[in-house]
Image 1 (cartoon, helix red, strand yellow):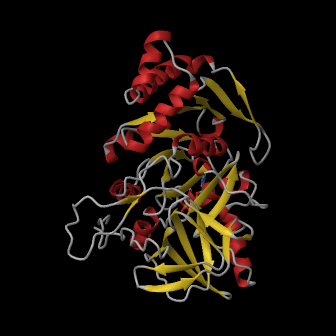
Image 2 (image 1 turned 45 degrees about the vertical axis):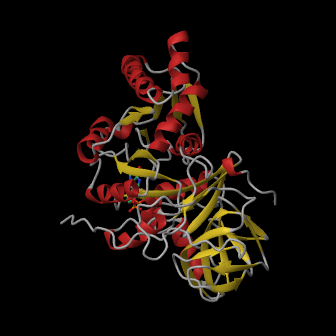
Length: 413
Ligand code: GDP
């Protein structure tokens, strides 16, 4: 299998307040990326996740620690970020290895306490975020009110990339403020099909107003875009997308998309958004090496960039036991690692031989012969490598920055 170019990899997490729709949205993402052959609703106990549990019982390992999905020639690794407050340490740990996140809030309640907690954690690791306002089909849903809670509760600058068309029972599509077109989902049950139309008459004024906000905010980070805007009175789609991506990565503003995962509306544009606005491993600074014993944390330390030609360096972020033994999930930051290679566990100071490696898909695991910078794989049979340990080439035995503990636990009672 050909190596995926680094700029075509996205390592993302999906995070949400419990019940906001993380499971459903993840399901739809797996469905639309073609890696899930079944689709079901959470309430029937018929989801791929449940299906995976059954598979696990039968001994076929499928795990949700990190699932690889392919969308338009991009490889999207979806890393599980536990949503519940009790798993705060795990959220913290998984945030460390992802490059971007989809932050789901729901259309009725908006930002809820758990979303606030996870938001602060994502801030701590500078994780670029795209916000998805879900459940716009629900009674009482209100996109604008939900979006307002982003300002009220999180104090952030957000920009709408879409506006809903209809709401509750009548929610049928979105105005895409980048292309200035309406996207309308068609009747089929999985919502896989949609078409473009002109923006409905009654939304034209509002769309123009929000488009202006989008331009003003997005172009504030992009001199070339601002110049283009002054010259032509508008900007190209590419310029606008580039500016949004830049502002998303540096955290100047947070883009907002919307839909209803449950009714299959809005998920494909969200996947496009992940590709367009969340960073690839080379869009962001690499990973820092850990401070030496007793070294001042504030001292500038070496940063290892995402680069296949450097010596191998990766971080074990999750270990899962199954009947074949331990599966150690590793985020690779630099270099290439092949089956049979020896590496150092630099955290513990011993060598490990790399046995079989797998990439997890929603419905199968795929054996791979090598894994390279920017990607994620599960290793079988590592002898003594724990969560948070660094694996590195013997020629450059770095220890990567450890996850910061303890983390503040915010009381939501
Ligand atoms: P999680 O706890 O964030 O993983 O949320 P789930 O995906 O399990 O969703 C919680 C409940 O909300 C389930 O009963 C879903 O069927 C339902 N749900 C999820 N997304 C939507 C949506 O867009 N609209 C509606 N009406 N219900 C939804």
